[in-house]
Image: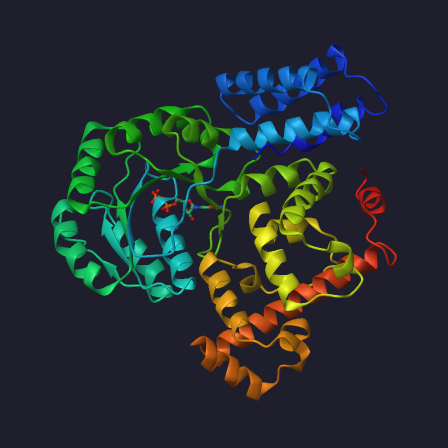
Length: 440
Ligand code: GDP
């Protein structure tokens, strides 16, 4: 999404370099570049105008924070306003729930249903899928094939024309057996009355906790209309944007978000069942701004970190205890998903296993309980923890030894990541040098 934005913004921001006061001409120019990029990415005109207004006003009226240059000040405002434009990401609870999928035919609804099933399955939840698409021939077979691949049960009947009947039969059955139930509904090429009527009925009998709308990223301005109709019918509370791998646009998704006053929950980024990502506006914009990302990252890191009284410098000098790690996790949680943050740091191509990023609040809680069973020397230097201590800690915390190992494994990954950061600054954590490396 907004592929061109990074470049044009960089050019625009360059023009502010070296300035000591913000002038109207420079800000106007920057806003115009920004508008052009957003409009060409299909972002709704009204949204673009609101954003431009906000940026102009803030850039000209707000005093730059002490010690911050004009360029950084403006960049920070642009960053914050873009994040706001992206909306708050939709909540994804990792617990029992029913999710109703809405969207037009071809949006990627069936594929995304299977991807979601996989997502929740990977989080350790028992998932079942119901195919309530009785309109499109082959819909059940398609979904069933996808679900079979990940061993997720798929309820449906290719010979039953009544979708409501399928839901009435399947849902109570599946609710007894599974924690997360995803209902795929019919889609049509256009917003026909029958389609809306059916989904309203399914919504009524299913009492789904969530009603998520699937939107093709390439959809453009029509996204508003679709979102509005589905929202009026069933109350959309999350948007899934598919095919982000295939387009530089995606602005339509933002219109859908604005229309439903919900947030983007996931992004589909490919055709395989694993190609689903949680949406994170901060990380998204940070990466988009390229050279600005580290700056923004560090600002926020400083804020979050000071709140946690985390001694970054000591950590970078090599003193990194389990207690530090816990504090750091708390701080990082405030900054957004770890994966995006790590992807912005120059870790020298270090491979971090995907699971390492999955720090959910449940996991944090578990870590806290495990750490409570450790002795102070163990907390200060986890390398003393051998297998008998692991057994003892696990018993004390009421968890499995595997859980304790998981915590230690995580600690080691973080420790290595810190070493990577230290290496790059020539022994010292030097932000300016880090920025230079990134062309800032
Ligand atoms: P439905 O009619 O809404 O159920 O759409 P389908 O799930 O059948 O998807 C339509 C087409 O889009 C299929 O060829 C999918 O493989 C493809 N598709 C779905 N999501 C994505 C995605 O995130 N990226 C790419 N490249 N293709 C996707």
